[in-house]
Image (cartoon, rainbow, N blue to C red):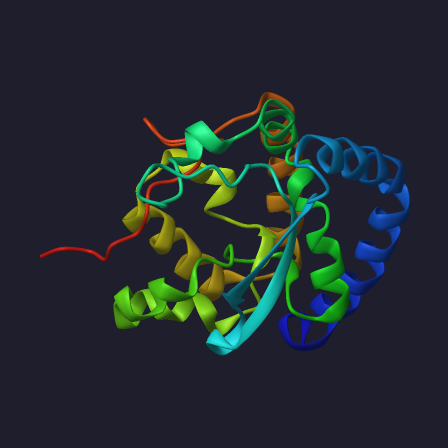
Length: 202
């Protein structure tokens, strides 16, 4: 009952309220990134959602588009701007995804929507993370975020799918608040965010 109906209703109502509350922060961030990124403050990317159905995720653009002499994008840690680092550190870049939640593409809580090219790299067990809507925050995010391995992250994602409930969602939202305040797990060792997932070897 909760997973099928109530969760979606609560997502919609809570996201509307949060958008109103954080609208001043969103507007200020938009203006600053508009200046820093020379008129390009938003980031759009297609991600797999519920049952792997693609949708367009909306975020603030925290990196510039600098490329090397071969035309390839520079590493994330090089392209991350000063303002972008602050925005990402405070998780402000995720606020625009409230629009995705209102549209029904995402939920407040669920496995994070990853890149479409990862779909073919999942094991059948890992693919189960798509049996619920992806979330702005999730069980893996509050248990290490980008500081844990991909394998551990997917195990936590599947664990959430199996145990999803109102009480678990409340727990994750509270832990998310604490992690944002303490700025835990923002990056993996040697990376600005998380290294690319190439599949589980062996």
